Image (tube, rainbow, N blue to C red; front, side, top):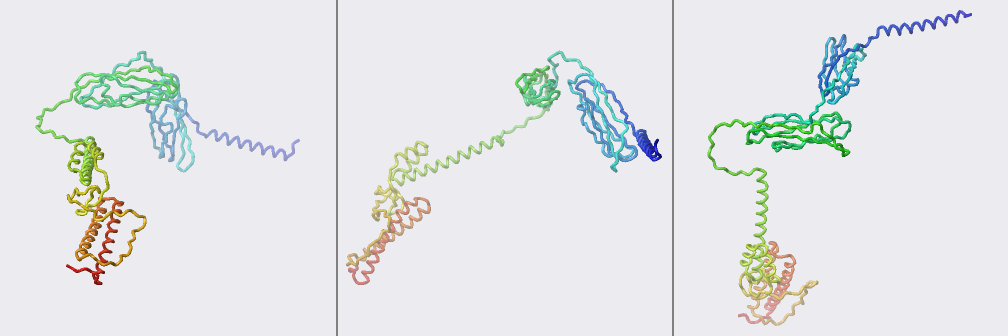
Amino acid sequence: MYTTKQAGNMNNRLNVILIVFFIFFVNTAIAPSIQHDYVSLTVSPGDDLSRIASFTASSKRLFATADASGTAASWVTPKHIDFGAIAPGDKIEKGYTISVPRYQNPGYYEVVWKYNCKYTDGTACSVTSDTVLQITVKSTATQTSSKKQPIYISVTQGEDLTDYLTFTSTGTKYGLYAWADASGNAASWVTPRRIDFGSIAPGDISKKYYTISAPEYQNPGTYELNWKWGCKYTDGTVCYVTDDFLSIQITVKAKSVSTYTRPVYTPVYTPTSDQTTPFIIGLTIILILFIVWIYIVTWVARDANKRGTSGTLWGILAFFLGLLGLVLYLIARPKGNFVLCDYCGKEKLDTLTRCPHCNKTTTPAFEPAPAREKPIQYAPAIPQKPEATVDDLKKLKEKLNKINSLLEKLDERLAQGEMTEARYKELSRQYKAEAENLKNLVTEKELMQEVGLKTDEK
């Protein structure tokens, strides 16, 4: 027998079970049932359908979306629709497109639009119905001819016309590459003459544009443009094109010509930018070469004069014979070292007794001192009985002034770049040694005159 306590526990358990069952029953009764709105569509492979999805808010402001699913969800663009914020009682419509693949197998397919929503305060809201599109794809007749009918177009002389070609991959292998080549008596009007469709996946369509430019003075008539298709797989195997040839018949019409009186004018040549640039570059190169050649001819003439030959003759030969004249002069020119003339101070060969510049017979003012590693040291002058007269002292001073003048000319020629620094040092050392010697002699004679060891003056 149950006790009173056990009976009370049993009643409590029954009450709990009844309460849970009641809550479940009530929730099930008030939960909205999801209904489906069915829409039946019949399409053919390759069709494009534009549809509209709509959502209406009931009592509160909310946000709504819709997502596509089902066996034909891949045909839908876009697959997700965002209706945004919808005020109570408003209806928002959004468009979408169903693109049936061109080579889709006939049969029955579905697109299910699942709607979702929530209120702006964050609470969830329920949707009473979804939309189910029942799409029936019907079969189409198969084309038996491998040639399409020609396409007829007409253009005016000088007119540009833009058209396009499409290529569809119907196989199951990936990595198909396709192209089309233009031929016919109007192929030269086409840009580009080869259209590359690139890599096309199974079931995809590639569209490429091209331009037909009819020549401005093309004779009116009918011309033909042929497109030959080709394709292959990346593994090297060849694929076959069902309609591998497309013919376009182009009719060229004459453009209207207005009557006018042609003005009389003298044509003036104005080079374009493309022609001007090479012309200026070529002219600049010719001018630079001419200046360089004039400098070479001048150098030949001056060098020939320094060496005692006819600078005018060699300059003329070098100018007219060109490189041959320069080579002949370098072979035939006299060899030797340059020295300065005692009268004009210009360079001449040391083997010449007559200066080619001033035409005077020169006598070296000194004997060139041999090069020494140590400075030249002179012994102190020993007083001797002078035998020189006043005229001798005067000649020594004139000779000293002349050597000082030659030293100044050496500085000028070095500054003007007419002689090398090595040659300048050699001549300068020789002249300075001679000048120092003359200074010592002049000083010695002046001292001897002061102490009375001088001869009678004239």
